[in-house]
Image (cartoon, rainbow, N blue to C red; front, side):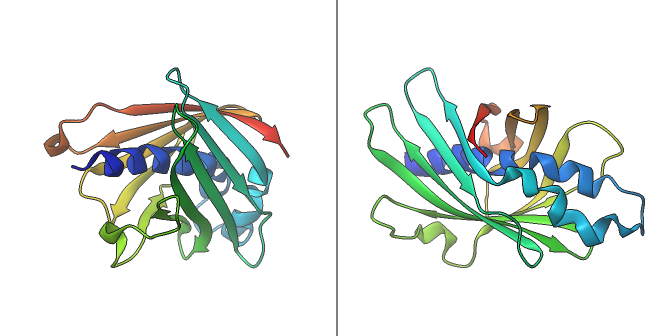
Length: 181
């Protein structure tokens, strides 16, 4: 796997992490009206989030408020040298049975990744009665198995990415803090 692909998967974790507040929406009773307001439940994601790694890398992610059943966001990842490593375009949208998260990767010059020529990476939120939000169904990646999002407080969360056994990769954990609402 190319080094750039590894970084993109790490950044996907950062982006998926912002779906954490969607848990309240997808944990509703089956058939309940909660689905109609699922995207409203992620409205607190609007704003700027930041994660800083020990090596000096920085992930920044911004989300616009919900509109017409979807939210749009963007992520930029700076390497330890301060250079842009990757950019992402992100969406969370209501679907028939919950929420779907999609991401497209670009290099610093906005050239889309060839590995996503057939479409974006897509994950689906599973319904949970309590606890962290889990995104397990992944389309568009050979190595990403899913992500678990654990909200510590409204201004902090942890995103844990897991990978397929075949990839031989250890989980990646990213800690985010809200910078601005």
